[in-house]
Length: 234
Image (tube, rainbow, N blue to C red):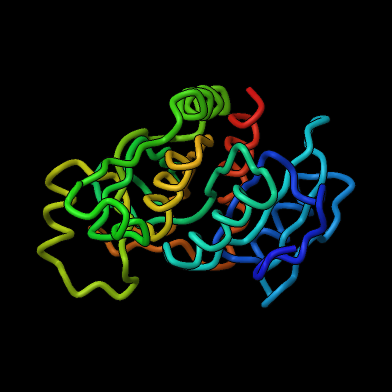
């Protein structure tokens, strides 16, 4: 048990999927896992452990934004021995070629700042995904026939962004989508020698203004979860 996770020793699997929303963690666990057990509900941040194709998996909420994810990822790695951590979440599309409902597999994660900024000081560290996970996820997406894009994303500090000039530069430099957590996950994985990846569903689009209705999100997010699970155990 840690300050933020009430799981007992052995309750957390070595492979952890991290949706931001704790209720999405509940949905994903009940939809894709068997023998599901609730292992955490401290502060309403739900975590579940179960089985997928004979493999033990934990699906645990991370909250919104890099500071929240940093708390959970740190404790999962350092106190519970998580070895593979895959963020599964939504993002906003930033390229014309990226459509709502498409999946983005994040090779790199650009950011203005992260909770790790104090460690790096003047260094602009470039956090990236684990290549083995990245390749396996791309292969899984191809096998499923899911429209998928592999490349750089932008992890923003704010949801209600008032920097259109910054978004324009991200788009200009080929950034596929924007979300709020992956850059710090990649930093922490590099620091602790773990594997990390972000597999994201495009739920809205910054250029077109299109957005996925809330009632359609869970159905559309299924591909993302399956790709993440297949990548983890490839």
